[in-house]
Length: 275
Image 1 (cartoon, rainbow, N blue to C red):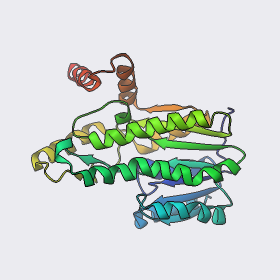
Image 2: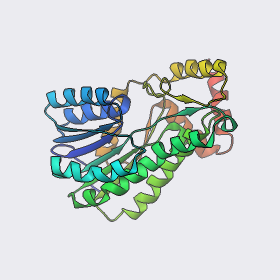
Image 3: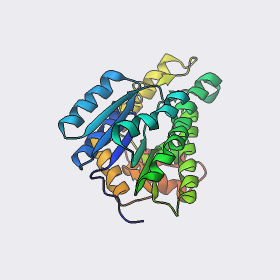
Image 4: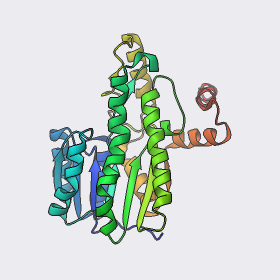
């Protein structure tokens, strides 16, 4: 495939109210995007993103809904086509996390996360596939995680969902290899977003463990989301199939490649050596 030019295109972004999603919307605006369909469950936050994008010259529509709502997703493509005339880019970014050991999480909690993080990506991709096929050239950008490369304790649900996004993206890419639709899967490392501050904690997780986990997250979630967005779009413009965002994600990928068993233990050992 040739490179992908964002200028004059229309993009759909989930989780556009904050973090990486917001930064992607604003970076696309700076790169000459024509239209943005911004999706988020938090109206006040997505309104703020939209206001800034409009000031930058983008034509913006706002879609406030829960990504877990299948009916809302199925209605979205028609609304986007009516307002924007079509879509060339789909960015599946919306996500949540659930902290706690597997046995401490209820099945309802586990399934809640999978519905948003994994089924949300699958349903959005399925809903917009006819729209993207009508575009001259199109790109799907799926946000996985560094935890889609390695498994870590207290994040069984999140790791499951992000490994799922990775696998789904890989399989879909093989099916679309002869089409004009490219697939980029993104594995961000420690990006400074509010995902851990807003994390749902397993009902039986001790408060001491909750605070310890949040303190650890503060130490590793350091990359500005604006920098992450720039890296992601640079890679998507080159139609890269996989993007590792940050040195921590690159190290995780390297360890997973050469030491696929107990990757997390080796990562922690290297971390202790670096202190």
